Length: 230
Image 1 (tube, rainbow, N blue to C red):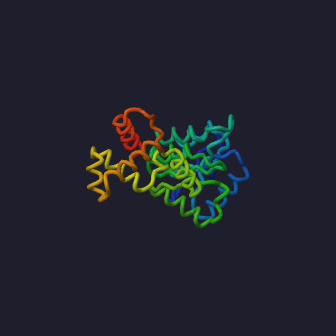
Image 2 (cartoon, rainbow, N blue to C red):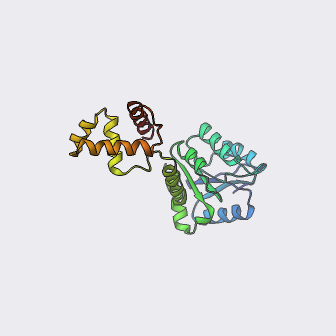
Image 3 (cartoon, rainbow, N blue to C red):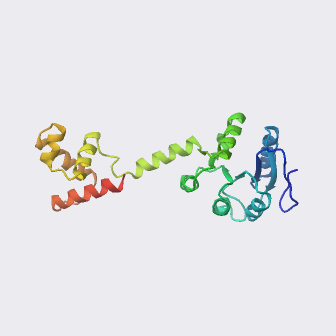
């Protein structure tokens, strides 16, 4: 028997996966509950209020909590705050964020907490069997991220990568610089002339936006930039 918060306890003794739903969209929540029940899961509780998430998790001890990030009263990060508290207090509980918003920073923060975690976009859930499979993977200890979020993360990393403008050969030269090799040593390693290496080094320093000061100092700064980006 599922409950709405606040309310009475409910439970299952047949070994089915126990799920708590937290979303202020009542139609979505009820539809999801019906879908999960038809798929053999037990929806043990529901709430549309963020302040009831943690109390219900403590009381009902679900295997999985499906929640939205933005919930009343402020519709900002209440769901994320609840997810943090669940992970800190009951780390074995699976968490699936089902959100309308692609928030990469929040997604990465959640995924960094370990196993049994997932983040999907509501608008991109189009296959019921795939969704149920995702739920199962999270409960069994997996981590799942929506492909759209992965793409945004990759784009963000490329945008913020100070080495993104370097060519493959320039990256190779910079890596050898980080090993402490001189231009002559790099030239021998890459089977090119020392003049070619000097040209690559000039391009690297320019692309990294390092100031026109003492070149040895600029080389050190370039190596520091390389090491920090790894």
